[in-house]
Amino acid sequence: MQEFVSRPYYLQQVEDYLNKEMIIVLTGQRRVGKSCVLREIAVRKQAQSNAHVIYIDKEKREFDAITNYQELNTYLDAHLIQDGVNYILIDEVQEIAQFEKSLRAFRSEGSCEIIVTGSNSDMLSSSLATLIGGRYHEVYIQSLTYEEYLLFHSLPDNDESLNRYIRTGGLPGLIHYDIHDEQQVMTYINDVYNTVLLKDVILRHHVRNVPFLRNLCQFVADNTGKLLSATSISKYMRVNQSAVTTDLVLKYLLHLTEAYVLSQVKRYDIRGKRILETNDKFYYEDHGIRNMLVGGLHDTDIEKVIENIVYQQLIHLGYEVTVGQLQVGEVDFVCTKGADNRIYVQVSYLVASDETRQREFGRLETIRDNYPKYVISMTPLVTSNDSNGITHLSLREFLRNGLKGY
Image (cartoon, rainbow, N blue to C red; front, side, top):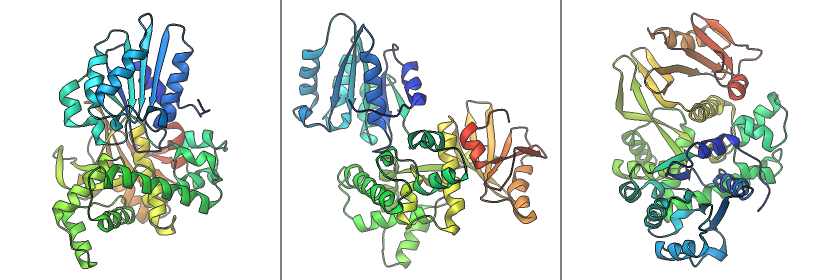
């Protein structure tokens, strides 16, 4: 097996759910590193004396004969051992028809631990939920965090490295390219994007209006962090000679979120404490793909990209994230863990004027509760400081240390 850069955050999540009769499902967009995480699990388990690893990679020709659950059953029966623990690891399991039937059967075997990867909604389809119920645990693999990016590319933590991360995004496969060569980077990112769109959206869902699908991706990239609705998108497309129904917009947005290309973020009424049904925000799983779609990072787009990065980092930190709605305006993120752990986050490129400070800090000051409140920005020389109970953090500090100690 090839060498890889370790991602211990995900390895620990997997370890936490072993020996609990749970099927562990590694999900996420293609090319974010699910296969590498699975291979590292295999290597670690092979080093244990009582562990027996059965590794199936559906992207390899040697496993082409396993096309359905009956053939999977036959293969596994031939390779299981009686003494010790069998670790059944399957990469891209959705390529096996009715795979969930095999997973259910072998899960009940006391000597089997099952870990699989998948790239789209087939992994958590109604069939899987019905057949397995609560017997699986999803580990969501994201594109590289800033800390992982530094590790992968052997970079120091400085402004230049942060700027490079903001521009290129965090697809792990960039480790094989010169990240300082923008043409190389964007060519690779474009190839990944086209593969995801083709395999996990167009072919899987038999998409007919491919030009509109691509225009929709472009539109969301141009409007990252803005409140969008199917109606507003449909009207915009109609003005630009691309008449589509709101139903088609909703369908294609669903396909893109199911393929982990986009993340959909609902609005939360802070005063009414309820989720609002219309106008959501969309962020890209990898901000490098977002940048590629708009032709690179532009000065007017920096705040959009920073907001995308902060959103993905908040998800990495384990928060459920919504957009806050107040009478005086919008709060970028309302983040919760459990019932009583909540924070509010505003994102800005620079807080360099009284007007910007009033806009970013003022909205948070109108929230009359005692939950922590943060402004995250790239303001030069900013250090963590408190203003009327609101903590101002630099983007680099947040990406390196999260919200520890604040």
